[in-house]
Length: 308
View (cartoon, rainbow, N blue to C red):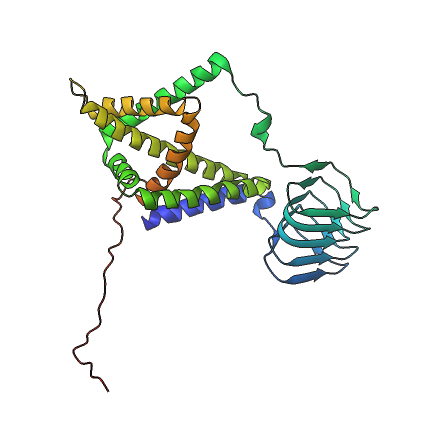
């Protein structure tokens, strides 16, 4: 297991370096405190301001993009890339120059009259998928049907090859639903925010893809596990027995059909997505049966106690 974890980290690091110029990425991270940069300052790479205060004098240079997700940025210098403001306070002084775009989705941005933004000023950060044409009518139905059939078929094959992971995930979701739901809420609050923040820099795009695939894998395993549980329950009430593979196939397909129902389908999907996300993590991708820690009440040894 340790060798596998090390291999995964090496793979992620290789992808990270593959996205960097010359295999090296330079940047500045500011998480707290007050920092003043003089006119001779020339910071390589991107700048990320999470908290604290950063003040750049006239003549200073930031040779990448600047990401403000909190804190306060005051600059009279030159920003060679984009200025992205997610939160916090940004003040562009009289001699400030932004060579790229100014993108604002939150926080407060103040520009002096003589401050220069050479690119576009964009309010709101639209993701690339928002402009993509969405299928409608029969095309959307056909895509849903193909996806549901593929997921159900994979679930049926997984049941035949290795059914225990599905049992472990379903057990965590149905028996230990409270800790599973709590972990699911935590994970689905953190990961999408992390994906959005990482997507703003080209360097971290490989990691964004990996995290996106990770979320899709967790969701798919959870759906198949719940579909297997539903299929087993349905098979018990049928006049003719079904094999575990076909039961999982039918249960997963029925579950996907429930998600497609207008009105309640979206609510059902949202609720089970949170629950199943936590269940997959609790069971460590189905490799272990989740057992909550035992609570023991310890009592002190009072045999040697004497009252004064």
